[in-house]
Length: 96
Image 1 (tube, one colour):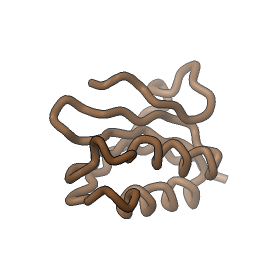
Image 2 (cartoon, helix red, strand yellow):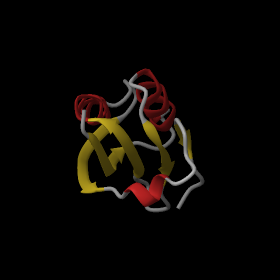
Image 3 (cartoon, rainbow, N blue to C red):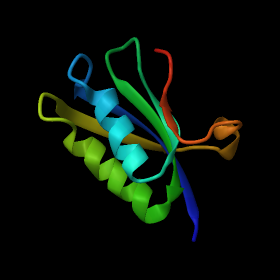
Image 4 (cartoon, rainbow, N blue to C red):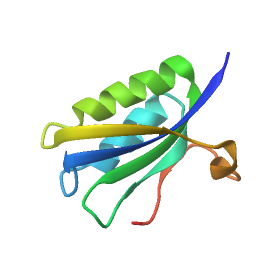
């Protein structure tokens, strides 16, 4: 089974609406490794790694977001294995 690592940035009404908590629950349900954090520009960023199908399901969930959110855009970029060094599971990281 191949492992996919992806970083994505979500814009819209994504801060102050439980978006990171939503991503944390979704990622843990899918047994992904990585993190999510707010960004100073008002967006949310996430880095996720796991089986291709699980990562694809996670991205689809992020495009939906929790009910109080509004996702205007989700931009994907490749992630690197080195960004996951020493990390197990999915966590919340400090704002960037």
